[in-house]
Image 1 (cartoon, rainbow, N blue to C red):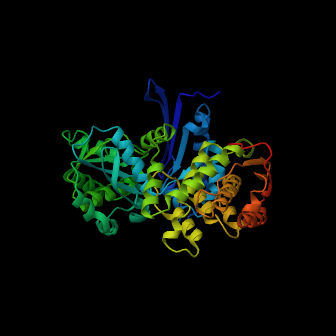
Image 2 (image 1 turned 90 degrees about the horizontal axis):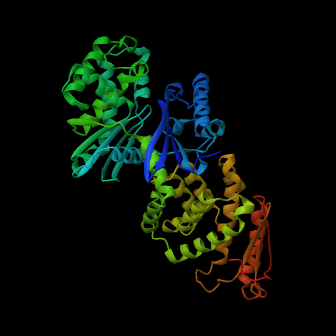
Length: 504
């Protein structure tokens, strides 16, 4: 039995997997359980994106343990995300099928900038408000995120594919830590920072905060030899720590007060990345936060459930940027939303599907801003590859596939490229969008009419008033085309006469 007051956030990082369980008490979130497993997913990934079998087994075992713990949490109150190493997997869909089965819930693979946004949200929830702008730096196992923002709103976010696990492995081959290797790797990271470091410095901030296990570990080590540090990191102390690592000369010989055995194999790479970031951004001192992505994920989940969804703002911003015809988007969205309500129970479409369909309808004509020719294909590309704050990669892929097939010939292979669990809802949502765009092809309200939409298995019946099709011959022909096209994705569509009045 599930507890309606429980919420769970699962952060599947490149170094560690984290689970937070929280309870809502009198309108406040209280964390009641935390689980952390050191999986080192990034360390088990080769240059071709293949995962080491032992690391894969360890990851799945961790997910199974998490799955047992979240079984008491209502499914809609759980969110799990995968970060940089999941983004690098050669065949992520195949791994996700097994991983989601072990965990017992879907896993969103998020972009680097979405990861940065969630980190910023988490840190902001656990840090006293800044007088002006706040800079947040998070060094994970496979990537480093830098975010500049005000209050709870990010202004600028960037993600680098350098983290403590990957950097230790690439910079210090065979575990040897030398000054030449350090300088070479440092120049590589500084080069990657160069294109946007000046913009961060120009915008400025009054407070710089570091999060993640790497930064907390560095702060703990520094406090062991500088009692005045008090949970902060400055460049002088970081330089001393670097010199100690160079003196030790090998990953296996690293011994420092405050450094755990789990963190020892990857600390050198983390210190190197932190040195590069503090140098490039001219950060003199970092405050250290115990809050990070997992807390941001939890608060983001609450925002979604309480209708403070960042995805709404993203859709609004994109609609304005691409100058979408808002009246047409509203016609299509309103009809599709009403239609989905009528078939939701039979077709197993829930509120999450309704939201995704609504946002797809709002943005389905993005491609017109590029060209009328192949506009659906342009919409497909934009939705899949744009940075869309709040959206996971699979959400974007699903929206892109539906928008990309909104009219014309249906290529079933486009739906089949989605993960298996998304294919059935995607083709059903596609049917609804195509009917909406067909009925409002004239881009006016004059074709609005009573209707009923009935689903029976993979059958779909659209009922329209008597003689309505006779007065709309173009729509009649288009609906006949839809019957043939929807058959390609396994939907048996037919039109009949509405006898009992409107269903809406």
